[in-house]
Length: 422
Image 1: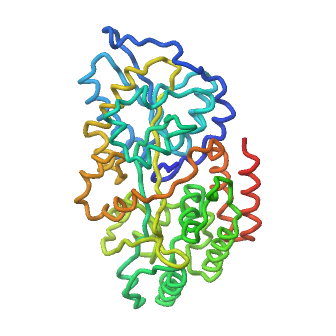
Image 2: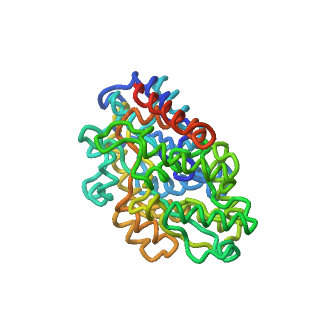
Image 3: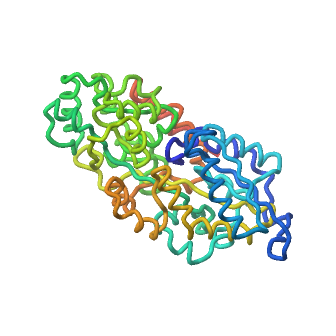
């Protein structure tokens, strides 16, 4: 999300924005010999959706399978993939850009920071019309800057409320909460029944911007207002964090939410320590691994009723233009989206497709149905604003303090950061 949909690119692209001025503005040098019989090597950098090197679901294992299949069909094109964990990928890519060693293909959580320096191919230069036409339209629109598409949606996710049915029964709660008042009442019952974390609230750096956005949406807020201006310290958002702070102060949430990452809280939910938590399809493997099966999924509660939207998160794949490998990149992208590779990444990591065809293939999966249903009406981070690459890391680092200290002051400082950003 700018997610690792399972974790988020923790450092953002602020460094990239500073360092990426050395990019070429055009298709540059590099060979394009594959079409004439020569060998072309595409350098690809990708984020790791798995549990790291050597694990069965590692990014290296996934991409090796994809690349082996592609190279068997395209022997003149070699794809050299470097998989980097989410905490380091943006910093390492920034260094590559600074040194003039840009990859041909990058898959990560954001793209907009590279656009202003002319580093990327436009989507129509590296993706066939039949493939781009199958993309979920609302998602594809977020790949555009000033009307031109540069980012290609890679995988997506949506969010919902998970609740532990056994703990709800123990606390005599008959249905999931729909409003904030009902959420607080349910949390109080869970606490009285001995549940240590009635509501799991991860506001640590892994993905604080996602959890915060879900709560903002519940009160008609967000990071920007309807006119496109930054509104982090809007009255709605201050009211939202004041409510959340009340839950924290009453001992109805994860202790010290600003220090807790999402994966940790999901593991606690899987262990039966948490009554309710916001999550996505990528949470399900964590719950499965812990042996938790008796849970429900419901829309996320808002101030006066359940959300009619949810956080839609997508990661991106993009093509750098320096090496002039548009034709070869296009073959690889078309292969990825029209073959079974995109389906495999959904199956492996419980992430959602970004094409209509991919959604249709998963339509029968009952566990994924609430999230698939939520995708068409999802709300998104302000991806298209290059300033998001600087604002996002600041949110991750400090917004957790808004449920510990003065919400208005913490959000006010973030507002200043957004207004001052590059």
